[in-house]
Length: 358
Ligand code: 5AD
Image 1 (cartoon, protein in one colour):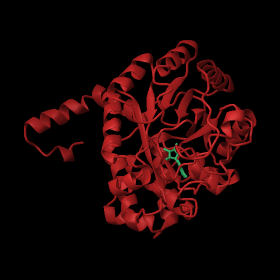
Image 2 (cartoon, protein in one colour; image 1 turned 120 degrees about the vertical axis):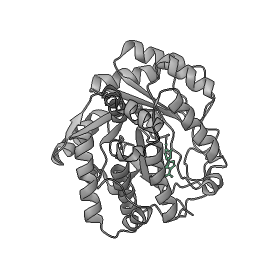
Image 3 (cartoon, rainbow, N blue to C red; image 1 turned 90 degrees about the vertical axis):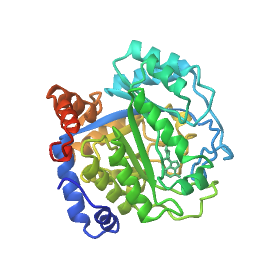
């Protein structure tokens, strides 16, 4: 199966044949990304946020104790991650300006003293800032578009989807490996919105995709809405795998939280090929409460890592601490070497239908 029609995506999202969907997604994962499940470390270095997204527990108006780790603390966490055997560290925070000038320093220090790939996840910034971070050595960037329904995006975040997409575009231009993603089951989100999300993942050809269910968070305006359906989330993951082929798709903390950590391995059998371990110091970790019950709240990073590795092996897969760079990059480089792009270009110039050749 090479592609799916929007109506077929819709049917699968509605649960027409979960068994078939998950089986195909598992096969596509195996063929395009192999048996490796990449382990990434995440440091949630500050919960200070200027945004007021209605779903999020660290929104500006939420009543939570705020923290902002020092440069030294953050770098120390990266060293710890490397010592634990991780090849990638994700630096995530609420969207704030406190670190605008510190990020280059942090990234440079980590790149100079470790072999880690550095992923930033610090929100919407200017082109110049993204450039500065990239020049400091940042390899990748995560910025979920949350929902492709622009009206819903505005209603929930008070911000413009257009601007968010412009940021994603800028990140691509700057040569980051770029990750986007969505939240499944947001109040007011329709199945057709999810169809659009999945099609957008394929169209933009993102290197990474974070897909998780909505989890209502006490103290937010959406606290009384029902959580996103876990099956719907797994279907979204499976469809994204089938359509994007080799994107890195994590079994997100949100989906693992809803499934229960003991069933996390199921996500690897319906398309996911990445998992993130939390290495934030415990005293801060519990304050980064985007939603309640996060699976990582209490377990120490080392024992978590051992457990998840066992689960991965139990699912017949292989945990990997390699950097795990974008498989799309690798594919593009190979295509270039084979002259595939040139052939396509030549065919275009000759006015032929290139679709048959690619
Ligand atoms: N439920 C699920 N995911 C959430 N996020 C924020 N709040 C929630 C919630 N209540 C996700 C957003 C964000 C990521 C860091 O956490 O998708 O991009």
